[in-house]
Image 1 (cartoon, rainbow, N blue to C red):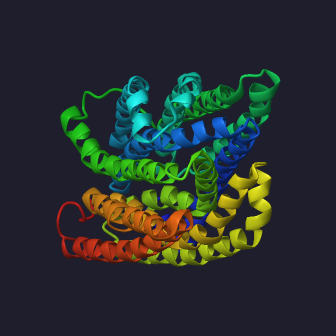
Image 2: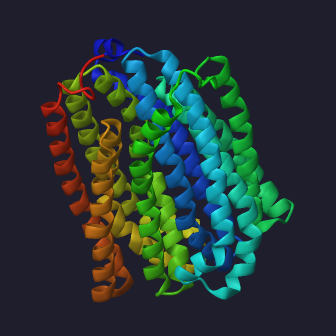
Length: 449
């Protein structure tokens, strides 16, 4: 995939070709998360609440791996756009070595700090024995998921979204097949859900790493790659990008603490609603994976006009699509809430969530696209600013104010208002970032190589 190929085929068609495999892949992963929640919901309120308290912590691991993945895609795609394929291969090897070590370190920190960390979220001490059983297999699956994600990032940077998309579907089917077996048949309960994920991710990692190696996309002979400079470039993008990705889980922890004030039933409903949110923004998630390699190629070739047209096309589609999703959840809110849980009080709260919060997913989607694009443009600090303002200037204050004025329903309304305001601000900040890139088009970062 070259920039000439992207332009010759048409930006819309190229974006679709890069995105559709990721849609199916991410959709399958989101389906697994949703089915996981449904299976765990059959175990009772306590396991579902334990899962709800784990979700924001899980986002810490996801934020770390996505931050490194963003840097991977940005640097490798930019090197390929500049015609330096050998550097791209060595960057791939560097990413694997650094990323796996960072994931292992974070898993250790999370395990040893689990008690004080979950106490900050307001967890009931009665849930801690269940957390202790669940977190060992969950952390192992999280590390394996990070390893698999780095391989996916290398594939996307080289223009291959089909292999990651296909393996996401395959690993999801493995997970779905093993879930009832591990959770119910073997009687492993909540830990069984994490073990099923571990086996699925391990299978996927074995396949994808083998393909990446045999395609020659990774090299570990770093003698001609200035390690200090390469690590500096990686951390220069990965650091702010990681902080951008870690802000949502920090905000999610704060939001969960707010919800916990309304009881374990509210936390259980919030956990289900969060799972549905991931499912609802699957197209946006796919676009955040397919857009950066295209933007990076155009940036490496100095073709910023194509960046502008490409992003405008993506944002217009996201707004229309997320409005349609919100209407669908509104219509199905009563039926869906009772399908996901047998607890009537949890179902009632979830229905209230589905009536309000999904209407804001368009604004949330714009924020996510803008963060992704700014990272690909080599402006991670701007991306971090967008994430910071969305969460701490709009979303969380609106959540708190809504809860203060109108209780739990007000909290849901606050989520709606906060995301819409954040989406508008994110678009304006991106426009200023692009104007800056155009203004410095003669510098090294924007000049064709």
